[in-house]
Image (cartoon, rainbow, N blue to C red; front, top):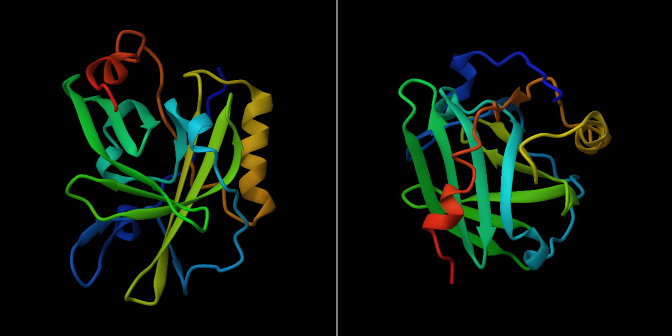
Length: 197
């Protein structure tokens, strides 16, 4: 399996204040969000199922977790992972809404909604999701999540999804690799416990 470790941005720029709450940001850059990001409309039926997070911009609250996976289906989302500290499971549920403009609204219970653009997708292999949030400070926070259908992937797939970011001038150097090893007994648990209807 191909592994990449990337530099993680300092904690001081990953946590910032908004007018209403403390938000664990990912990559913070000056100025407003770009308006020229090209994105795709997604087939909700083909998107459904389990995806494994392989890379993302750093998320402070996820730094001590591995085996991160997400399940999409019929307006619902469930994410799960395992603590590196004590081996306990963390489970989050929420809603997934397909907006008319092609964006995806993801809202976990008890958290603010984020609006994601799909930059590239191969429903059998990978999906690249991007979000940007304008901050009251005049800066913006960028979010990138790269999911694959299988816990392991090859070099060809890696080149495809990082290429989708580079084509639009979105940095790949801040990407953080997610450990998907030794997750065999864990991988099927969310779909077994949650019957989406």
